[in-house]
Image 1 (cartoon, rainbow, N blue to C red):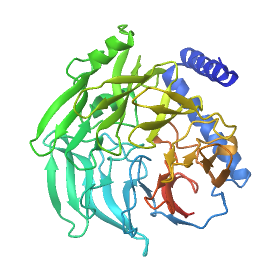
Image 2: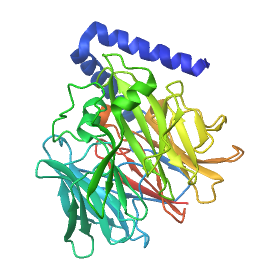
Image 3: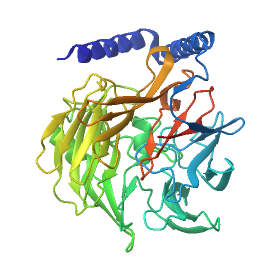
Length: 424
């Protein structure tokens, strides 16, 4: 066991001990006090609002509103590079009952144009808002319709709704032939901040449902099929104890649309420690393969190409996996020792990544060569510690297809989220 892994386990054990002594309510109060103290310290050190960077940047924000995109595995900017997709939200919005504004930012005027609203959103991933993979004047996002989660299609030119699909997608294939889905209510219940809580989780009393898991939806026919069940994954994990509840998170389709990856997780409850396994599968429903067991707790991912995945762990380990052979290569460099959200540049020789708040609540955005020989920090910026738990704001860096612009979400100036872009 590495020294860092041992310290991480000791820290988690200490937190569980404190929580057991003072209870959930006491833990929440203590956490709030600690985070406010961090903010006061940052204010006195003049860190609030601080951005240290050698690259030109632009900040987009709204008065008394959150403005953010969401997760790092989707393109925020269109091909013409004149629009940035974004969500707009009231300061104290509640995902269980409040709607979120869906729209785009004009990069020239810096104005936000609302096109719709959604009742299916979360703090970490928004509504899974994205550009349509075939027609870039269209956008896709998840919403609520007839007491069921769905995917809506809207036209950014006319401002009109073009269609609705009775299945909320986590990801779609590049040809828009299929969408992949999961139980967003179960995800939110067990991993707050990543699913939706507008509708109750009807599987709440089941530990590993046989009729729940990863779903494939054929867009042309409207056929929805369960590809792999939570029960099947629970049995395969060998961990089917009654106290554990199993769920799915982070589905990502490979660049060629032939395979996808997903994480199978299980926990005793929300905000409790979890175990995780990473799987890949063919879109056909065949070739289910476990690439990583709970020994290496995968947290984030990106596709290097149709065959290789780059992952990070909660312990700060970066590694590549060949989905055909299962071969694992660890990128063991001094600069890659913290968990982050990775992306490959088009040359596949450079990696873009970030960090969670480190010393003095500063987050770091950087790029590093695949061989670890060249490292360059793009920016270091303050993260408001008062936004924690499921409301925390990770940078979630997004790289444009031409690799010239990076966008992030940030609370550098205080509790309100904003979008920042860098030209590199």
